[in-house]
Structures are given as C-alpha cells and as structure tokens.
Amino acid sequence: MTHTWRVVIHLFDADDLRADGDVTKAHAVLTTSAGTHLDGYGRARRAPQDMDVPEIGEELAAARALRDLADRLLRATSDDVSAIEHGDVQIAH
Image (cartoon, rainbow, N blue to C red; front, side, top):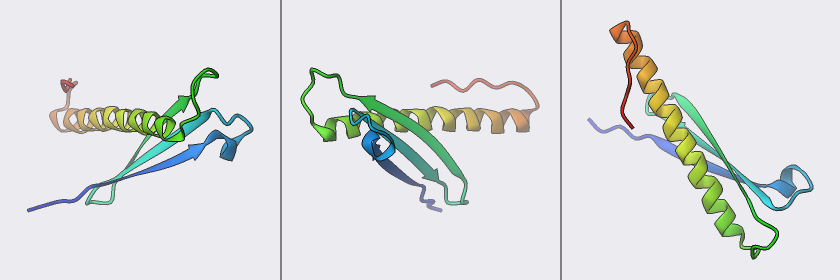
C-alpha cells in the first residue's frame, strides 16, 4: 500500500511582518495520509554587506524549516514508540 505525505512551505519576507526587510521566515507544514499535521520553522537574515538575492534567503529559511520539521518528526516518532514500549526510546538520527 502506498501513502502520500505532503509538505508545504510558506515563505514570508520580514517586510510582510515588520519593517526589517533583511529577514525571511519559513513555515513548513507536513500533512500525513492520516491527516496529522506537524510544523517546522526557519528563518534567514541577510547581512548588511551581502547582495540582496531573495532566493538565497528563501532557500536557507526553507532548509532550516525542513530541518526543524525533521527534528520534530523524529521526536514525535520517539514519543510514539515510547508510549507503545512503556519506556524511554532513543531514535538515532
């Protein structure tokens, strides 16, 4: 049986949120085939001396959001296994 999980990444420029246009924020949302949702967050800040290339900030913020999402998914998995096993479980990364 095949299951499809979907990840959507929302990108926000800081000027959408506040007056600091050098920050990009990302929100990654995982939706499992069972309808469970899990979120990850990331951000990137452009240094004043760096060229203004929005795609680079978006890539970095998205990568950090995906890494956060992966860490949260590993913790959720560990918690689920711990509940079944009735004890602490460490899942290797």
